Length: 331
Ligand code: NDP
Image: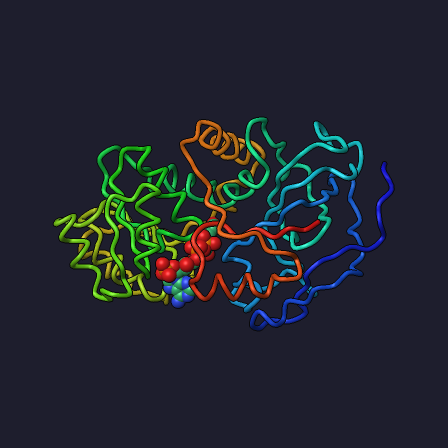
């Protein structure tokens, strides 16, 4: 094993709160690596909206202090034990595991995937959690068919820009919502046939009905509190509304009788319940890598932040100032 430092740079959260609770440190102990784990020296950590849910307390923290970040990319710095197969020091890898706002992260080997040739590490990470989310939505939450008309909220966000391209590739007509003209223009460059600026037109449902008079086949709604009701109105008879996020706050408890109006199917989807087994993780990561390699999926990196500037990254994300993926440079 090459020599490892005892301490590292990391960003910790000691309590719930605003971005100010994110604390940069240079003397966090390097994590110990368990028998079935590898230690990854991160090159980039991925920022996702879920990180803000843990920071604010919307989702309960697994432990305190908390190191945020659900995914990272880097090289294997140490292999835990004989339980680990197919991974060795210096392998270039990408992974799903909490704790990537740091120089090093210990990761169960079955959550680690080798980076394929022909795709850069920032692109892989830019598309990893978000791209697999988009793929699970279109393949399992509601299986998109050629000719479907699909509504996506926050279409210019990280997941939104990837979803638009995948929907177009599948032969669906994608309608998106976003809050500025610039975001609408960017979403149109990423697969959306129609965009509605829901800041200028808060009553956006009639705009959707102008494009799809009977309603859309499916809505992918990650905005939640401010859009959930409109999503039920915008969907057609026997359509599906897939809720998968809380950018404006969670969807409140709803009366199930609302669904009988049009025999609407609803679901609350999460990536982590689609990639539980090793086979599932490999299936979706390989599918994603194929999309990236074929050039069918372009990843828009909004900005790469230094680890010291994670507070600003959270402010930008929650302030609706970003389009695409935010990465943290961890070295
Ligand atoms: P985004 O880049 O999409 O950022 C969130 C966007 O939501 C904003 O840019 C903004 O776009 C929109 N938004 C609408 N209302 C608000 C509000 N009140 N405050 C802040 N933003 C608002 O983030 P991500 O791509 O990281 O994630 C998108 C969504 O998908 C999140 O809800 C996230 O939790 C969810 N997600 C769920 C997963 C799952 O497994 N269930 C996995 C990955 C992501 P605009 O200004 O155009 O309205």
